[in-house]
Length: 292
Image (cartoon, rainbow, N blue to C red; front, side, top):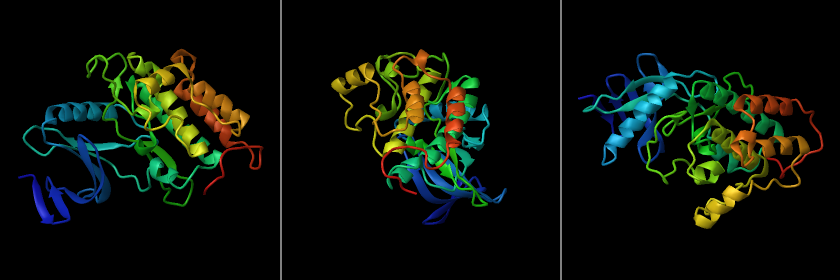
């Protein structure tokens, strides 16, 4: 047996990984904080559910493993190990990020423009690497973004996690026509028209995340997921409040253009966000009241 119970709260997986507390759960997997007893380092273990959807879960885990193994960047969560052999507990072993998700951070309110510029730069750089490898993430949203603390007390680094529904550019559909994978509130309009996913969709989603972080509000209501809301999304770009600074407005408008061909690449968005990080303090802003 590969999973030995150590106590009601912990378990040893494959004589190596000491499972500790659960830190997340989705439809196809549960994520645990764990300790790699051989390497003596903390890790995150993504345990694949063994249920009626086991085959689909395993397929997506294999895809996630292959895609994560193909990329490497400080703003992407690192894959360390995987066990996906049928008949045994299946899991992925990834870097443990010591810090909250962006979603958790945003429960405290909007962020300073410089902070938003930093995470936008980090994530756009990571997406540029992902896209150069021919991969589309397809689910860029605050709950899939980790804010990694710096061990020396410096600025945190944003890291993109959960490649569970990522795909290769031009790969065959894994869903039937009319079925769209992703999170509606952050989805690019072309996907709502049943178009094939592309790298520009990730840029659109990142633009919505940055806008939410600046204002403290979703660009599109979370409960607006019916036919009427989808039609409105296809026809109307997100509203950017007048209080948003002009340089920020220019970047956000470009990232969230309805036509994917008019959006910047992830690499171009990273350069624009980098320039926003250099805007001096006290420049005329602005956004909603700021929270540290």
